[in-house]
Amino acid sequence: MEHKVSVTWKKDGEFSHEGFERRHDIAFKSQVHLPAGGAGNDFGADPEQMLAAAMSSCHMQTFLALAAKKRLIVESYHDDAEAVLAQREDGKFYIATLILRPRVQFGGDKVPDQAAIDAMHGKAHEHCFVANSVLSEVVLEPVY
Image (tube, rainbow, N blue to C red; front, side, top):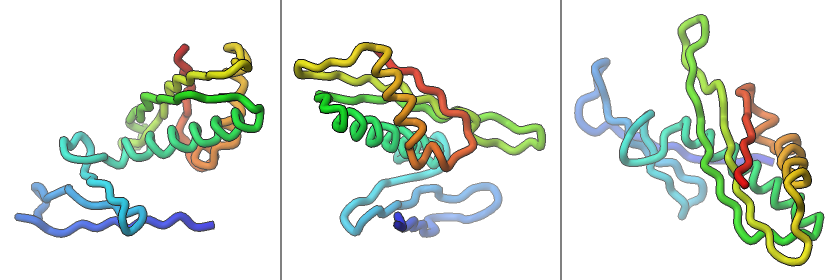
C-alpha cells in the first residue's frame, strides 16, 4: 500500500545562499492541505513537527485499535508529542528522540488499570508502522 503526498514550493522574492522563502504546501488529498515551512517558523508545520505528529498519530491509531479489540471505551486521547534535535559526531543534526505524552480517558464499566494501559502503550509502539520505520529513540511518557 502506498501513501502519497504532494509537496509544492514556489519562489517568492529573492532566492540566494543568504535566504529564501521557506513556505510551502503539503497536500495529502486534493482537499486536505497543510501550510508548512522551515524549522521554527510561525506560519505552518515544520518537518520535525510533522515527524512527531506522524509518530503520535500512528501510536494513537494503534492504541485505539488495541483498546477497541479489548472492548474498552476510549472517551478521549490527547498527546503533546515532541521531536528533540541533537548533533551527531560528524556535525550533522538529526531527530535523536521522539517523545510521546499520551493522555487517555476511558469510559464505560471496563476501565483498565495503569499497568494494563502501560502494556497497551508498549504493544501500540511495537506495532506502529511509523515507529518501526525510524531509528530515533521513542520515549513514551503516558500522563495519568
